[in-house]
Image (cartoon, rainbow, N blue to C red; front, side, top):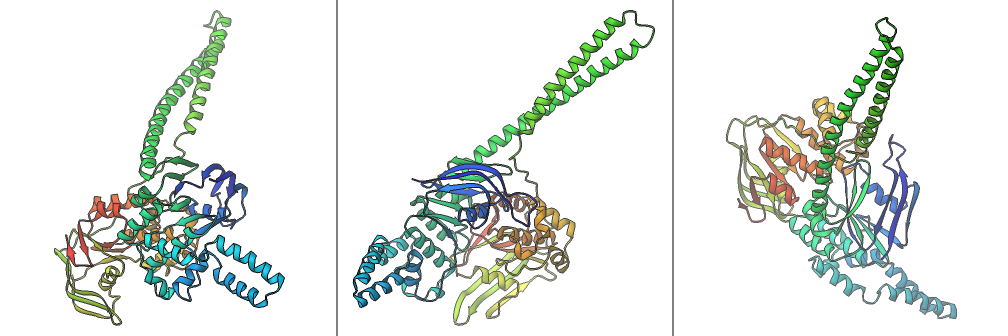
Amino acid sequence: MSIINVNKLTFSYDTHHENIFTDTSFTLDTDWKLGLIGRNGRGKTTFLNLLQNKYEYKGSIVSSVSSFDYFPFEVDSDGITLEVIRNVIAPYAQWEAQMEQCIALATDDALQMYGDILENYMQHDGYSIEDLIVKEINLLHVDADVLKRPFKTLSNGERTKLMLAALFLKKNNFLLIDEPTNHLDQAGREILAQYLYSKNGFILVSHDRLFLDRVIDHVVSINRQTIEVVKGNYTSWYTNKQRQDQYERNENSKLKKEISRLQASSSKAIGCSDNIESKKLGTDIVDKGYAGHKSAKMMKRAKVIEGRKNRLVEESSKLLKDVETVEALKIHYEPYIKPILIEMRNIQIHYGEREVVNQLNLRVLKGQRLLLKGKNGCGKSSLIKLIMNEVEQVEGHIIKGSKLKISYVPQDTSFLKGDMKTFILYNGIDESLFKAILRKLDFSRDAFDKQLEELSGGQKKKVLIAKSLSEQAHLYIWDEPLNFIDILSRQQIEDLLVAYEPTMVFVEHDQMFCEQVATNVLDVSNHKFN
């Protein structure tokens, strides 16, 4: 067991007006399975970078952890997968080459160096590492044959699993796992959840509520003004958070009423005192001493009331600091005049010689919120691209309704570049409406002045979602819209879609979101519709 002590941490970026962290202190145990949660822009990834000493900060972060390893990370993707993974775990190839050189030299110094390298090699399981890798990836349901393939040929999901396995096989490290589910379908998320639950010692950033519940045993929550560390999973934390927030709202309401009452009493007492003082100057007061005494008494009473009021004001100021303000969103949905918006008949989609969709028939009906599900690579995104006229090798027929207005949120955000003003003008959306939606999604005011490419992954997704919600459309096509989006924003979007019931076709792997939003499901893997 090791402890990470964060003491009086203060940090801000040069481009920010406000601190990300201010005089923040808390303690973490490296045996915990920690879920790091908070709205986009609150500093989750920043904190992971601070643990790795990537930025200068005030205060201290003290730990006996030998190294912090961050996922995802860049690897040299040239070469066979086994060698790529071995070299992530430790520099085995370098050690093996050095030992061969020592044997070839055969001097006393060389043999001494050989012994030192060999000891290090054995401490890192050099002779058994291949068997350990096979055993580890088997826990992630990855076939050992993948180790013989060039790393470049692996899918994003396969790379995710292999790189996580490599990090868990390293010695004396503590893992910082940032959004590992973005390239995984629901089946892959379940496998990864089981795998992580069997491990100890990591910090996990994820916005998938069910995934967090299946994995973590402690929560680190970056709130509006504080950071709290509590035992439990996401659901237990969220339940207690709602209970605490409601308690503070109730207390704040009571205090406001009492403060208002005391303010009225204080004003009345002061008024009486002033009235008596003014009458002392007239001729109708016989005993001016008595009047002065009564005036002073009323003023003293007013000061006592004012003191009580100030104490309640101070008490009230300590409430609601971390209560999140979640405003309802709106969508400019326009129901289509006909019941069928899109019809596909005998659709076949190819990429080169590879067929990804075969003989698929589908109708998109008014009022449906159709979820496309299935394993990675089965053609979900290809169907969405087909609707958006972005697929070239296609056979069959697709019929779209006349003058059908479609609003599209793509999976990829890398095309977002330039300033916000240009983006708004280029897309012909209402600036006030667009920015109001972003503000409701907790988009910081500082972020409006940034170049789009400088935004975080979650902020970029919010830009695309806000654009979509600003557009008048008959049909909303969203391809994995929730990647990097924080939990509270997901709930806002859920509530919006359930309330307005727009016609949608979407791909998403957040199981809780899908259960709340989808009215129909098409399993693209086997063309099963329900």
